[in-house]
Length: 229
Image (tube, rainbow, N blue to C red; front, top):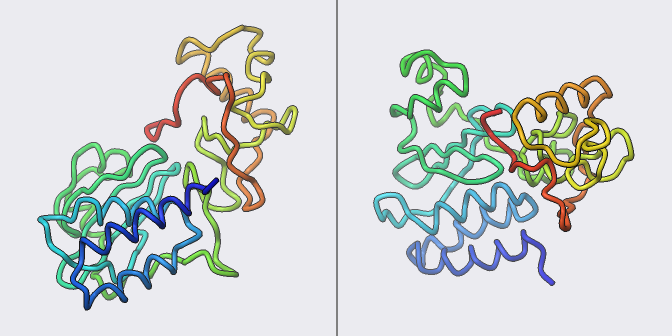
């Protein structure tokens, strides 16, 4: 059975063939190959090639992370003539528009900006952006689900996070119910209480050795990973 990255690579190969001119295929595939082990970036590339902005048939030449918070990242895709800003959360990839243009107010608020001007001030010129690491030896890896970097705490609800009580998978073990002394998490208050207990116990940060583990019949933390907290 193919893993998620292998499936994404197959999809991308098909979309690229139809999405860019033949003389640009080599460049497009080189970027995809560079990030072949990074599922999150493959999701980003897939979104770009599935829905080419303004139907412009241009290959991606570079990927750059503008900023990241709580597993939600703003990435700049640099193409032949245009550059675009995307937001990536554990649940979706969304095109915000051309780079260095205004973004939705909720995005400003999430990343702590009070105005468009303040945000745009932190958007450097394309030539000053640093390419996102490819995941090759020596590069800092990120969680394939919630996107936090190695050494950072997972976004609450991430299916990769390890439970500090039993060392199983946090969203599929029963420790959350045992700690709260309940059968099911039904309210935001209960979730907040569990979060506090988890912090007090000491959360286990992400390491590249942690693998994706999907829950069985359990609903994990009873909520999907929530990029807004």
